[in-house]
Image 1 (spheres, one colour):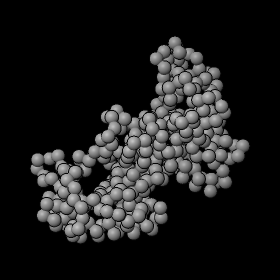
Image 2 (cartoon, helix red, strand yellow; image 1 turned 120 degrees about the horizontal axis):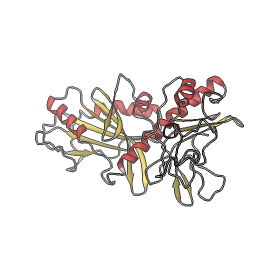
Image 3 (cartoon, one colour; image 1 turned 180 degrees about the vertical axis):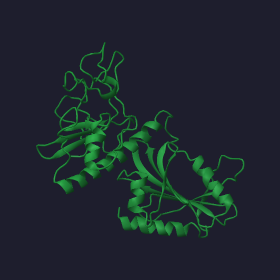
Image 4 (spheres, one colour; image 1 turned 180 degrees about the horizontal axis):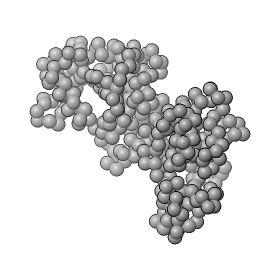
Length: 333
């Protein structure tokens, strides 16, 4: 995907949505769920220009205005803000928002939504760009707001699965931004952050530990994102990720899963297959080759790049091979 291709298509898109609508195939598959606004006809644009994945137009009832939606593949797993900065020709000062549980961005007449789409066993990240024409009537603007309010994704999924998918998509976007920061750091310093001091474990930190921000974040010069859940998962009889003190877990157990008295890595901390997963971000520096592991755990049940496949099953980055071999799913090396 070339930056210029996307930028040029953006300009064509905003000019195109004010053109005539004759010659297109009409479908009555979208309507507003509000008594105060009329139903809209949906026009599916055939053969949209690359790299556009799908394109739709919603003409106003009087055919003087139009609301357009373009869908772009987001194979880079960029957040809406990162995608906006990279591809929008003349970026302004967008505002962050959430649309149906997914991260989104708004700049003037345009909204950008980073959402996942699931068809069969395929899961993909898409960037939805919705806009209306300049000089649109107040009625069209109100219809746009109503469409935005009632926009629903993943209607083919069970209600409990959709939030998991949305959180996973944010995880991929977050880790992509962290990887870029790490590469910039290496370009400037000649190596990745070593985490030599300031963390419970030398060369390691995670998003629940103070060193995530105080050491790694400070080295990278930003406030780092944290996992959407950002929590350790515990067994019923205590903290599964602290050293064998299930009846009386140490006082930091539920905050850091670290016993300052023993100063050893917990038995179950690193991907014990018998323990529940931790929903945290992890960074581990590997000094032997100046490499790093940047790991997280996904929640959604289908393979979602860059998950690994062991024996025909999906495994999230950081998970050990179920057969006990010295293999693990790694992201960021």
